[in-house]
Image (tube, rainbow, N blue to C red; front, top):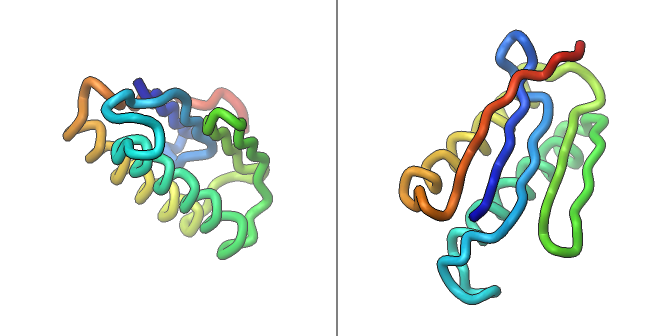
Length: 110
């Protein structure tokens, strides 16, 4: 199962996310569920870093797990990218509930 954790600030804006695991719906390299979630998460990372030039901490594990955290408070533009990622992953979760689980947690900082 792919587990996605999305961390929100007290105001509801997304400040971090992590993606772990594999869906197991097809062999590695042919799994459209894994590919879809991965594409959304990596596109969010690229949008924040290369397009918006936001200061981020991230790590991509050789297994494919990804973690990202904004170094500064989320703003309207970073929120648009991260909220769009969340919407896309939620649709994949809706279509494949046995393969993807999204969990929203509240950030205690800031």
